[in-house]
Amino acid sequence: MGTITTVYKGHMLFESDLGNHRMLIDVPAGMGGSDRGPTPPELFIASLGSCVGAFLANYCAQKGINAQNMTVDVSFDKADNPTRLVNLKIKANLPHAECNGREKALLRVAEHCPVHETISTLEGIEFVINGK
Image (tube, rainbow, N blue to C red):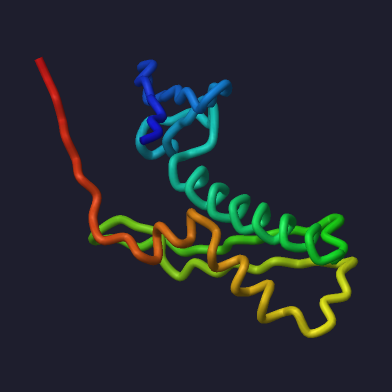
């Protein structure tokens, strides 16, 4: 089982160790953040977009499809009660690709990235909170 550790640095700033990388995460200004890093929802959306992009790029490389300058846009809305992201829409653009009828295959590949598979089949998350 993998683990990513996030440490509260004070003043609503967090630092996560992700393997050999370290990332600062801030919260929105309304929660006391100061734009020192991406917000947790931004990281979530970026994770989804980059996961889809990675799976598409890999498939394209295997099939000889030009993925140069590919972009993946993930649009979303914010909802309240409970606070969450809704209406996620993923749009991949392969400006130099000649798909030749492979659009359905590309869609299946995109849908099978681990981040999308996780959120589309999520049944529950276990929380454990330890204190002194």
